[in-house]
Image 1 (cartoon, rainbow, N blue to C red):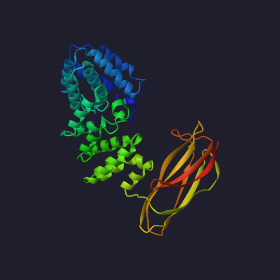
Image 2: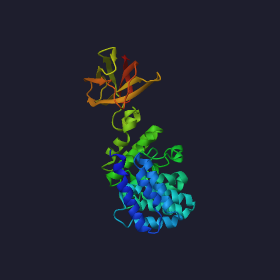
Image 3: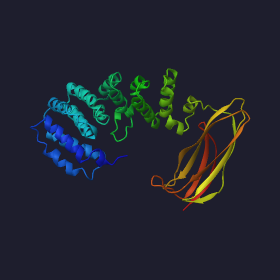
Image 4: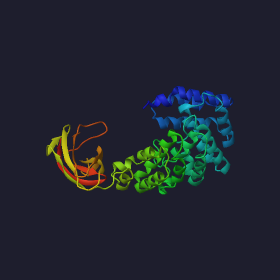
Length: 365
């Protein structure tokens, strides 16, 4: 991931200032110019906000005048890249503040024009927060655009949990309100668009996992050559969480199994050490069993509560009467992204979303 100054740094800000000055020669861009030296300590989004606010100060007229300036600036081939983020944010803020249907609709249209230069996915949130129904209706129209960037904007900009973005309470309060957009795009010709659709559907895993599975099942009933791959990506979180219906969609149906284990090599270990566990799994049914085998490490947290984290082990097909052995060495070495605390822990075996026993151990400092 590039550093913030590599995305919205002094060079990007100077390019923005030059293109705006060319489009509006009489504009007072002194605040925008002064913002360049203030970018240094700021995070990426804060940099975009700083330049957005400076741009709005430098172009103080009404929305139509502002939009004309931006469209003139867009005639410059250098008007692209990360410097467009503050521009699209300014367009959205200006249009919404105008409080007219004409400004709202033209602002959305301008975002669609600019999204090919840098995705307008963050700016559209301003419109969604102001009038979700009107903005979603426009996004649904975008699904029929001939431009893949605009079609992707329809999906990406309306995601419930779009990274780096502000939340849209109306979307979170109405789970599934954006599904009609995804239904139009899941068979899109562009992988760029389809990845967004999969990520959007996966966002629902946090609040309404059953909606993820229902949508995926409906798409699998009317697929194209790419639907299976898209669905697998969209189901990744509910699969990791052991959602039985999601696993069944991918062929991992409940099976008749006998499991011996998991067994651990030690009852106690220190933070920084590893624990080894193993298990034996036998198919006692009359049909081959396709199994997704995971394990869940239940950790004691700083507040004394237990929380589980799922890890993938393997996927196998076990013939009737066949047994397989699985094993794993799990490290408790402290990482920058993971800290361990002394106390009781356990390892639980999960197969096709169902629990098949656990083994307890103690982690000591």
